[in-house]
Image (cartoon, rainbow, N blue to C red; front, side, top):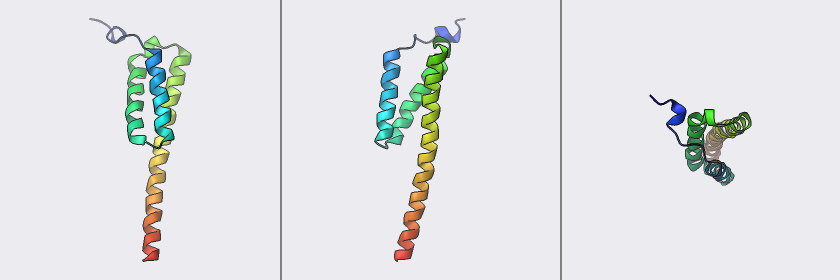
Length: 94
């Protein structure tokens, strides 16, 4: 039986870098739904290719993913707070 590292093709640094770049562009445009999909792809690469990454590559990719998920959580909270504020402001104005 083949081990897990042999079941996946070797990591493509160009593809990974392009995904990271796309993630940054989407976040910059506040397009968190599409960014979530890209972050999921990067997370899959991290999990599937962990043994093929050197320590620096692994840490960098893990850092990007963790930062995005943290930022996404903050963005969701901010969106909820702004919605609540808008509702209160509308109630006061009514």
